[in-house]
Each structure stands twice: as C-alpha cells, then as structure tokens.
Length: 249
Image 1 (tube, rainbow, N blue to C red):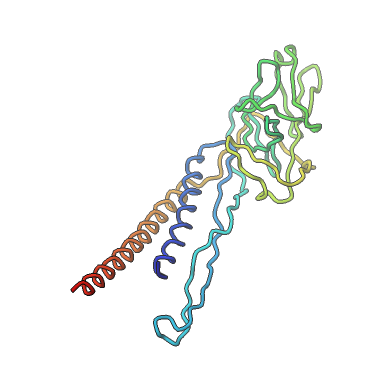
Image 2: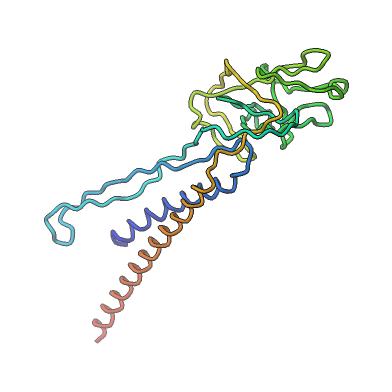
C-alpha cells in the first residue's frame, strides 16, 4: 500500500467517526437536555525526504481523531406545566441512582413510581443532597407539589426534601452511557448556587440545520476519499497485470 492509500484511509477513518457523531447529534435533536458532541482532530505531519528520487522535502498530512468533546451550551427552555418537569438554569446535573451506580443527567423529565419514589423515564430514582432516593407518601402525592428554585420540594403541609444538583470540574470527563445518562469519572461537587425551574424542560442544544449541513458535507468528503482509494487500488492492479503480461511474453 502506497502513500496515496494511507492518506485516503486516514481521512476515511476520521470522516467515519465524524459521521457517527453528527448522526448521533441529529438523532437526539429532540432529546430533552441533550448536549451535542464534536470531534477534535489534529494532523500528523510526515516529512518525506527524497520521495520518488526528488531531493526536495515533501510534507504529508495524516488526519488523527484525538478526542470527542461535549458542547455544554444550555438548550432552550420549554414550558410544559407538568410539576415534575424540571429544568436546570446554569451549571449542574440531576443525580439518579442506577443499578451501575450514581449517574448524572440534564433531562428533567421525572415521574412518581408506584412506591412514591420520584424517578426518571428509565425508572432511576432522583437523589437528594445525601444521595438518597426522594420518596413521597401517598398523602403527599395527593397534594399539589411545589419545587422551589433551590430544589426544595414541599406541599401545603411543609417541606418534604431537597433536590440536589452536582457537577464535576471538567464536564468533558463525563462518559455518556445512553438513556440521557453520564457516568462521572472524577469526584462530584454540589452546585452552590442552583436554579431549578418547575414545569419546564430544557431542550437539546443541537442545531439541526447545522448538523444536517455538516452531515451532507462529511458524506461528500467520505465519497471523494473512497473514490480516490478505489482509483489507487485499480491503478496498482493494472500495474501488476502489466508487469505479469510483460514477464509472460
């Protein structure tokens, strides 16, 4: 395999990753609290000396996929009127308890399970400041539920519990696990100044028009590089056939 093929393959590999990330962004354009992702690329520069008998130095650029980072820009708020629809204004994440441990989410779509526990759509309990599930009694469920901006949950009879918001030093250290959940890989910190809006949901921050345009551009670039790889492969096959025919004759 020669230099042309290596260059094309490096670009195809990077473009494949970009297509996957962009397609995932588009698929989650209507997912509550979803944060879009993007790839960070660098070029590996290879200095070629005396290539094809030339004395001049030639530089070749290979694409390298270094990492994926998350766009933490806040999404738009949409009023729903549902008392258990919650949106975080500013930094922070809701913490929920899963079978695999504590996970973080910006998706504030919650509901009350049969045992009175406040859970997300995946059935994972919402946690308070002590990382315990927040549970309501049947009497509390029957009353109008109020959630203050600081996360205090109350009814007409008084305070029930407080929703805690947590964060990490570096949001891009969070590992996405699907179902709108993130696994923290570094210590959690309580958000000192938190603002929760009841009856509201945070929309995805995906710019669907931009992502669609990017998807089309990436697909065209992928096709061009694949065609280049195919032409180079055909060229080399033709060269081999020519050598074999000349040898046999």
